[in-house]
Image (cartoon, rainbow over all chains, first blue to last red; front, side, top):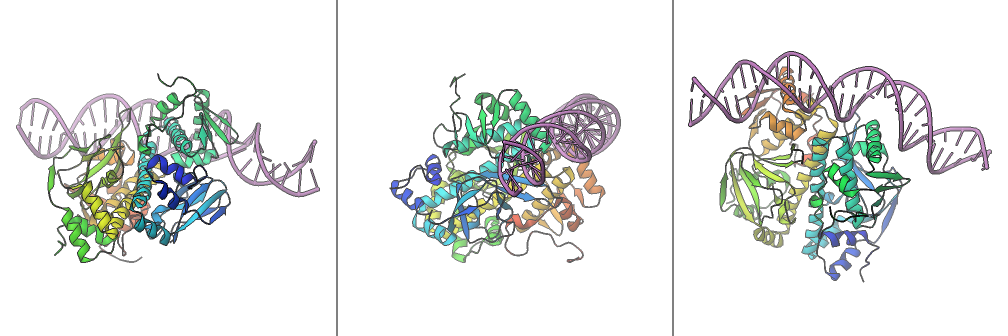
Length: 253
Length: 253
DNA sequence: CGGGGCGTTGACTGAGATCAATTATGGTGG
DNA sequence: CCACCATAATTGATCTCAGTCAACGCCCCG
């Protein structure tokens, strides 16, 4: 009944919540019409007062803010399965912008729809709420990342987080993950300059932790990368023992 | 009926939501037993799995994390009216710690109580949810603060935020606010070293933006401080035209 | 009056920013 | 298939903001 692998929201929710089949059907029903968005387009702008929220079906988007002196800070990346602007259901207006990092497919969910959902399905309401709380946990972790880690650690941490999150929606597997990010974007997410991101990623490659291939990144040594980034997946609040790739080799040690 | 000024939660919610008197009574009912906590005590520790959430009635608490290499990053400050661990209602375990910055008084709300509240009062459920979304907005702003602003801007921004938030619960007025923070704490919140916080705050004082008096801080030039910190209160999502102190002088210009 | 915590100061250092090219790379039109 | 262009990655040189180290003063408190 409920699509199983084709709906990234459900796939993700299975890691975060405990849903009945009936609830999955309801969730699947959220995806009716969807919209295509070009890469680099802005999906939402600071100040907007949207009457819908968006479930990302394909592609990568990011939240960002431009400071008065023209610097950009990326506050989060979102991958399929994320309702990246769920907060607009309850907050009047956008306090930041959302851009499409790649071409995207997005399901548009009117807020009336969400309101009905939350009233008729308290458990699903809590699931969506919980999702926004996990978002907040990720924000907190990014504060730590940017505030207290050096360049090497920051990038290692970011790679780990993206891997863990991508894995559960099928964008990463066996240490290999989608990597549509430019170094400028990584810099804006970690509070570093492009130049320094470049040098640091070279270092990560030199240390044999990762390697890059066209639109993908391979993690060669998960343990080491996780250690370098001080990555502890607990803040992602995944259900079982998720949050790490099957290190191609020794599972222990 | 509903306490008006003695309950900081209600006072804050009036800025964030639109509540009926009946709803205020329900909220007031949340504060039954409360607990005293000593300054510097940890209220919650990383890994805890609490079955209650806490409404801060008096004092200041902060969320923080210690990195493996021993650095502390503070992720948020909380003041009376904040349910600083609301996320525990839906997330299994703490992914950070919470400490008491000053001696505190806290109302303990069992999660069953919250569950009943959300089921019987959907509007209040949304109010609490919205509160957690505003928290998340603050986290996002802190990412920008730490990621893209220099020391002077970071501290100016933090002072503005604290002022705006304290004002609505009566801890700040006419440019004067409670200031229980040590420079170490400011440093850990802004990702700076104590030494640099000290020098930067001297600069802020020298520039006549602020001055310090025992347990209070006075903002002498709100406009300038706000400009210096690039502070735009929209992210706090307060209702009317809040988010700034009545600059003792010219309201416009 | 002897700590201990906090604020302050000075001297030195260094991670990462900035500036300025240079070199891939992928897509495009001819 | 190839010249061409824009975007992204890379490199080298230099600079600076903020960190680190190490004192020292102040004030509260027992």
